Length: 119
Image (cartoon, rainbow, N blue to C red; front, side, top):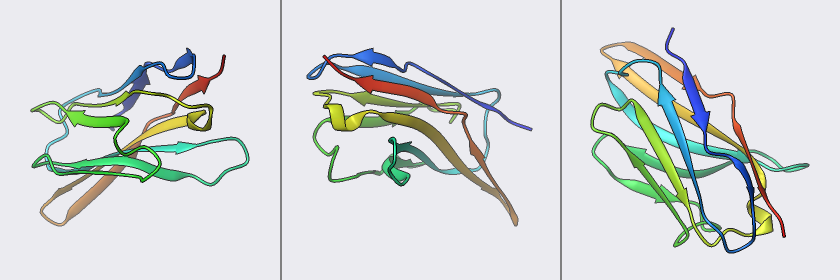
């Protein structure tokens, strides 16, 4: 079973930047979609950003213009560059990867990495 290992979370000041990484334990062949979710305290989980195998990206309105999602060529890593961070960005950030090979479908979740934006 492939595992996703997230890193890069921590405490950062408002206006600062942080880079989150989600590393798969092995190359995930057939990857269709890579996503970052987040869930703040007392809030519902929301989709922050996504990127397709072909590189098409989408962002939540709340982070558009501030966050950038990217992936490596082998679909082993998905990153989230977070700029101009706000206290409202404080949340547990989770990586989610979808893959399909023929009729076989799998999706994987990381355990999450905590981001806290505070002065």
